[in-house]
Amino acid sequence: MLSYRGYGLSEGNATEKGLQIDAQTALEYIQHHPILKHTKLVAFGQSLGGAVAINLVAKHEEQFNGIIIENTFLSIPLLIPHIFPPMRHLVYLCHQKWRSYNTIQFIRHVPILFLTSMKDELVPPFHMSKLYKAAETRGAKVWRSFENGTHNDACMQPGYFEAIAGFIRDHVWDI
Image (cartoon, rainbow, N blue to C red; front, side, top):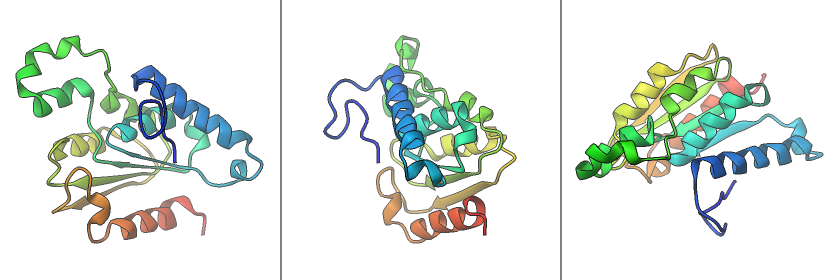
């Protein structure tokens, strides 16, 4: 579990570049850890964490055996009109982009699980649908939606953990 800058007990401000550095640092730690470096690696990210995970896996695909994204947006500029409608005309001022819809196309072989809450009040579900369509991985693309899930409670929905376990069993482990 990574608590990057500006979140949890970490200091600093959450910026796109800073979060990318934090994720890269976590990957390097895993790569040099005497035990972890020999395990299968699955990136998991929820909302902004999904954008961080997509970016990290796209840059280091050979290090990953899977990626799970939950309620993640296409990009910050495309999300702003839904969260702050009056700001839709000022999107060009946004300097944090997180263009996941572009970045996900660079994931070519890693299996991807998309977990989507259909009642997400922050990230409209069509963002996840478009990310799913944009993904060009030759690995598996698995879609799992939760009819009553909202942005932060997908993990409370029936079938959530079973979807993750099934994805890992079927697409990550070599059984």
